[in-house]
Image 1: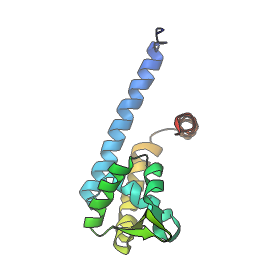
Image 2 (image 1 turned 90 degrees about the vertical axis):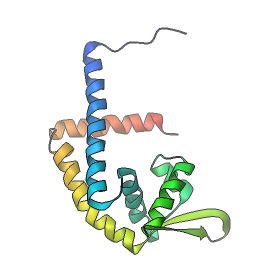
Image 3 (image 1 turned 120 degrees about the vertical axis):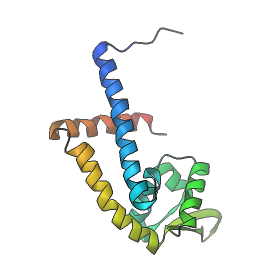
Image 4 (image 1 turned 180 degrees about the vertical axis):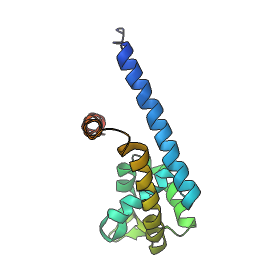
Length: 151
């Protein structure tokens, strides 16, 4: 096995700043949602994806892929959301094995309230902190990363 191409000092600083920044940002956004609405950031993302889907429903396998979770992990998360009446599961007509996750009216109402706090946080802790040029560069960079790493 060949020796890796080690990071130089500038690359190491940038990489560590990225890791620290993402960790702190994610933790803060998650805390805002948990304290204000009793949901986690991954749960918020699931509710968001469901709200954007036709009829507020998505097949579980498709939802798992869109939020980058294993089917098993998603199933546990959906079970928690079901317990709170935010999501329901429905069978897929014509496909006995298929299951839809469906955003309930209560889930949609919670999401509408949580979205205001979440977007304020994203703006205050991220968007407004970096220059528009840097923000655009981050978007371009991670679009490329996502493309390279897509399953």
